[in-house]
Amino acid sequence: MKVSEIMVTDVAKLTAEDTVAKALALMVDRSIHQVPVVDESGAYSGMIFAKQFLASSAQPASKLKSFVTSTTSLSPDQEVEDAAKTILGTGSRALPVVQDGKLAGMLSETDIAQTADFGHAIVDEVMTGAIVIEEDTPLADAVSKMRRYNISRLPVISKAGVIRGILSILDAAGIMAAPTERTSKSAAISGGRSKVKGEVKVKDIMRRAISVERGTKLNELSDYFKKNEELVVVGDGRPIGVVTPKDALELVLPKKGEIAIHIAHMGDEDDRRDIEDHLTKFVKKIQGQIRDLQNVVVYADKHRTRKYSVRCRLITGKGVINAHAVGFDPISAVKELIRKLDRQVKAEHTQKVKQRKKQRGTPRRG
Image (cartoon, rainbow, N blue to C red; front, top):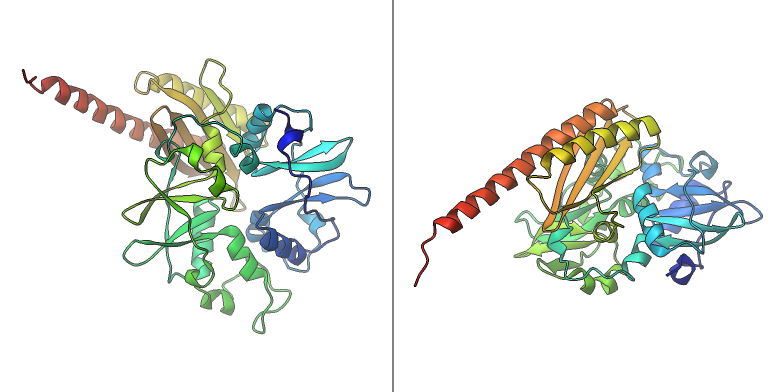
């Protein structure tokens, strides 16, 4: 299947002279986290992301030219499987489809997930553990939590721990960018805790969460993903994990007969190689403990505080092992990440050994 067969051609786009406020209004209206930027001739210039505005104290009146980011592009004739690998490798939700320098369309992880066959895989195998927020929490605190964990969404719970809704970066950006009588039109979107931001609570702007039970097959979720970027996996009404189209696609990454390590967000090639070298050694070390390891997906980010955060997902035939670490350089961050992964792998391996011994020690009835 070719990219041209499933890409979206009715694409919202902006120019470098448009403002941050206009971009955010468009994102909120279309429920999209990124918008392509084109010049007067329709040539693709780059992309802008909602996350950028929250991370950079952007002024609503600022021109977008300061925020345009160069991205990888896809071609209409590219195979969808190859495009999926490219999208996951960049860590973007979607990439532009460019032909002769002009923007021809967009292809998102959601578009691909709706065409993929996940076999008998269930949500338990790909979900990420849920980091939650209480509904009465101030919005500013929720945004800080998303920044701290480098995530885009938070399941919202009651004091009793029951799921009440979902809050995303886009929800927060929309409310904080909107001018009110008590905030200046030039107030920074992610600046200090303004009066309005302090008054707004998570429950005031959260959306209804779409939830599924553990054991739900991924192939049953395509219709949900058409209108929702995330599904909350629940047990007894309480959030256990979150599943996104990206999580599902990681399960069907192209395999080459050996364990593949996919690193996203890291632009520096030397840092990328260092991270890959450390993880390759770690993967070889644990292969005796995890025999069905299929893919390793890493998201590495550099922050304004000069810190690096690294998230990793070890995708196995029976589930996903997640870890997150922070360091002042990529190597210290990945070493801490490996220590955390190693502890989890050892704990799971020990549990499996105990279960096997218990099964062998159980007398047969006859």
